[in-house]
Length: 326
Image 1 (tube, rainbow, N blue to C red):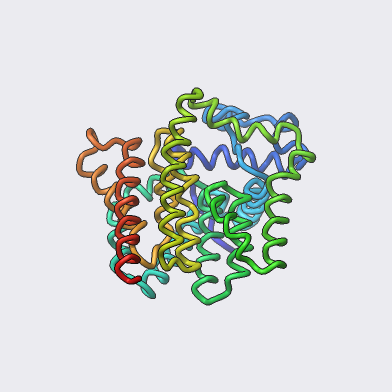
Image 2 (cartoon, rainbow, N blue to C red):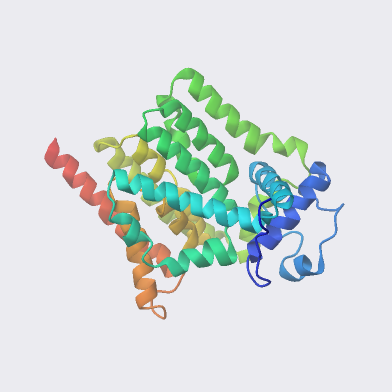
């Protein structure tokens, strides 16, 4: 028997929403986005509306439904399994850092309070599911298994759109891998439109909730697009390998999402994926460090801009290094 994992009453507000979303799927998978056939509990209704609860693609919803069912059988609950998933991601990150640059792990998690808040208190469960898949892809790439890593990146993209930039590497894949990658994206992101009513609402939910107008969207596109173009420019002139491509592929969409939400958490989630060359992890550590030292000056929204400035410095350094090596 596995002992019960106690979820404190005020902990896991995101998990409370995810629990309702999981129960909706287990009750009737056809009701995944309409959420009409299952009422919320008083706690669920008090924490999130039905619309706000689990606005994720089907891959995440199905994964969390499986986690919820497993948690109910084992006594761990969805909250407990999400904590275990966070611990597994940290353990895999620690192993990777030991193989590359060990000092990045304590540097990155020196501000453990922020990640404890996101992964234990609030619980970014959907991001943790995606991070686990991306971490699997990174470990496979390190072992030289690029085709399998590419397919895991496709699966991660169907969970959260952060790795969407990785799709630009389809032309360099083997034909079978490229078709499989495209098939996974179509099955996970396009076909659901013909299966579930209100599916497209998850892609407008965040913008409507934040009240973004066309100027906000245009500004975010301009900055994120400029950084993405520079990243592509540097990559073509530098010695990026598959591990680099996996890690950097999360940055463009994470930056765009962070700018729209005026929150640093989206970009930070992307930047905690281990970097064998240190740059992305240093950007996360610098932004979080400044936020911790000067919370009234470097607020959570400003983390995005601080981290972006450091990332640009990293890319400029990579470009100069490539020029000197040429």
